[in-house]
Length: 205
Image 1 (tube, rainbow, N blue to C red):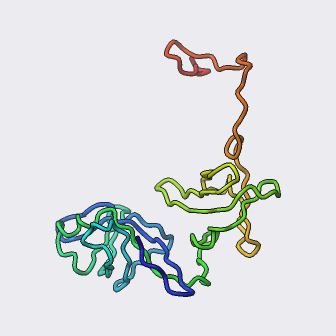
Image 2 (image 1 turned 90 degrees about the vertical axis):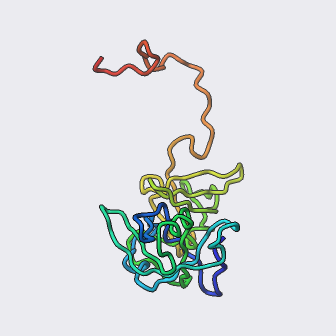
């Protein structure tokens, strides 16, 4: 696990080491930040989230250089001299400390700690609370705690059109069935016509 942050500071997840690159200790990085030029400067230090059985548990990494190869970020770190050492860091999560009062510079961008705890509103009615944010390759995913259990909400503009940090709210316009179970359709007259394979037939067939 990542180390606890100091008072008035929070831990931010900024990247994940996905695979060794080359023979000189470099690692490809999956970035969780929109500002790598700021986060990944030479000398930057990262707290590591690794299994307790890892030799890197409880240690940190100091960045030597971040390079770009075919749009992929590749990092070189101090005390990671070769591919063998790099492979011991694969899947490690990189964390940095951040002032809790500091806001992102990008438009429509928020830190995880700003979103967790927001009241989730649907048509002006509170339906739950943001409890977790997961950063997936395709998109970010919000976990919303509701009275009936957790709901996973894609963090995209079409479904989350408004975030108001000052008001402590996040507005959702979810598709049918995301926050409630749809009733079974007992009328099958509108079922799609299928081809011999059982898949929906296209209009061009």
